[in-house]
Image 1 (cartoon, helix red, strand yellow):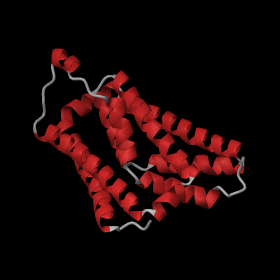
Image 2: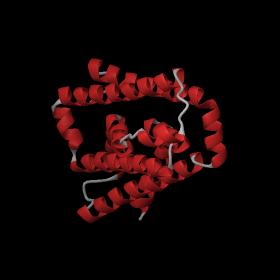
Image 3: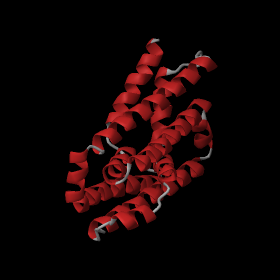
Image 4: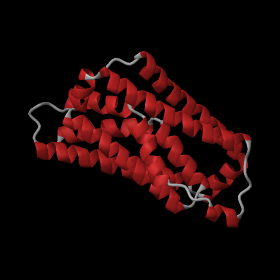
Length: 209
């Protein structure tokens, strides 16, 4: 129980720290219908599940043996975050007044974007490996590891459902519509920083494997 509680508290602190997932989901929740926000949340949650599972299975050992693969994953992930930054900055510089008609015709794959947003942030793997190596010992059995995976996944889902609910409140949506160019611009800058750091780390090996 102490192990599971430690994992839950550590994950909650990590979730409370704003990152690409937070900015992506809050922006979708404030600007799009509830259905799109849910798709984004499910995509991000699946990404967290994948990273946590890979960490529990020992992917870090493979990456240490193949540092070029680690750097390649980081570079590709950072490049996708930079692409999202480009989309946000373009929207900020050229705000589009959406009508009810064209808003329904614009279809975006929010589940896929949520999944890729999380998977592109390879710092998540480093985080899970660090946490598991410090808390989860070799004596932990498979059932306990499954419970850890379930807690992390469920906690992520509940947290981002709360964030989406908060940013989908009418007053928040109204403020977003009023300041959309500035908010999108700020989010774009954050994505540039996240993505740029990963690309730099991938190309020049700034992060230790």
